[in-house]
Image (cartoon, rainbow, N blue to C red; front, side, top):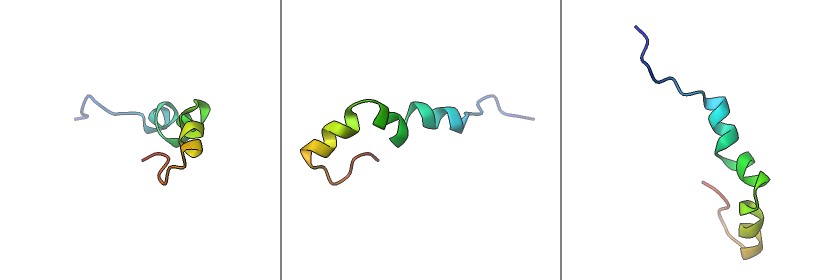
Length: 40
């Protein structure tokens, strides 16, 4: 029997994560600030 919740990891990675953040200004802002870690 299959469980109900089967998350689509490919879609999730587009919504969240590093590549999605590059599209917004979050990464740019953090680079300017001189952050060691840009995203988790």
